Length: 227
Image 1 (tube, rainbow, N blue to C red):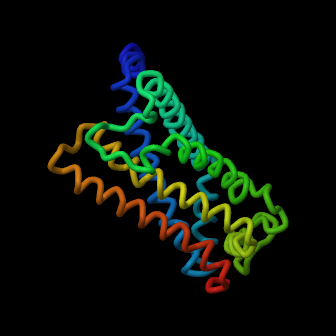
Image 2 (tube, helix red, strand yellow; image 1 turned 90 degrees about the vertical axis):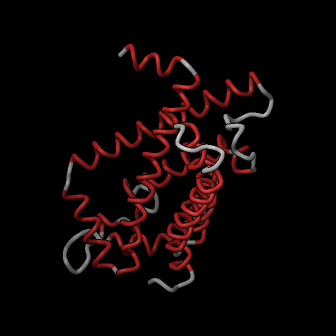
C-alpha cells in the first residue's frame, strides 16, 4: 500500500498511472470494436455475440465495473495533472515537451470529459436499455429466441439524433487518441527523439482506424446500407 501511495504522491507516478490506464482503455476500445463490427455480419452474428456475453452472467459486470474504475481513475488523474500544470504553467494540459503541441493535445481534458459523458449515455442506451425502451432488445426476441440486439441497434441508429450523438462522440475519441496514444508511450519512457515520429504516426493511424470502424456502424445504418 505504501508503494501505491508513493506512486500517486508525485507527478511522475501519476503520469505513469495515467498512461497505463490509458493503454488499458485503448485495448478495450479495440476489443469492443471487433465485437461491434459483427453488426455487418447480420442479425444472427450480432445477436449470438450479445447472447454469449450475457451468458457470462456476473463476470460481465465484474469486467464492466473494473473498466469503470480504470476509466474513473484515468479521468481523475487527467483532471489532477491538468490543474497542477495550469497552476505551474498557463499552457495547460500535461503535454511532454518532446511532443508537438496540437489542437488534440490542448483539448485532451475536454475530449476526455466528453468521452466520459458519452460512456454513461452508451451504458444507459445499449447496456441498460433505458433510453428508447421501445427498441430494447430484452423486450424483443429474434427467430432463435434470444434478445434481438441487432434490431435494437438498427432502429436506434435510424434516428438522426442518436446517430449524431455517436458520430460526435467518435470524433471526440479520434481527437483524444490522436495525441493520447503517443503521449502514453512518452510517459512510459518507451520512445525517444528518433522513434517519436513513428510513434506519433502509429497513434494517429490507430485513432483513425478506431474512428472509421466505430463511425461506420451508425452512418451506414442511418443511410440505409445496413437494415
